[in-house]
Image 1: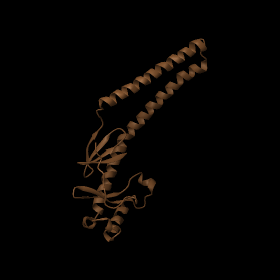
Image 2: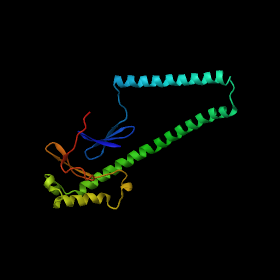
Image 3: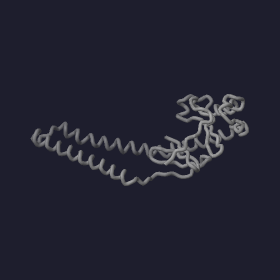
Image 4: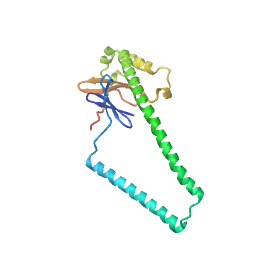
Length: 200
């Protein structure tokens, strides 16, 4: 999962779709289909062409081996393998697809609820006046900074990294048309580092 900022809010990039969230993290839509450019389409067609050509060559090689090497004789064990392996593969594919479809929507809804809950909690915990007084990196670790930091740490109090499951807290400040990172769980992120907007 990856989160990108958009002009109207955020976009959560999943394996099979893109969820669009407004600035208050309420659902604003999703993108499940995309149109590829002509070059990408031709590259994919070429790849599929090579795949089917390789498959035909493999089938021809097997037939040649069966006729000229085995002289059209096939052992009972080989027949059983050829019958059971495809059945097992098909059953595994169907089962995995069923499991994925069953849990995908549930996980998606749960993730949206957790993100919205964290955002609401963070909004209620952060003191706007203290945040407004943080103006530059020289305010690092002052009284206002430490007070806000303590409130942010409360979000994940008592949870270890495994329980957080990849969730992290970051505090942004919007000022003069630019978004700045004020606090982040990663100590390597400098205070008031500009948030890079993704283009494209």
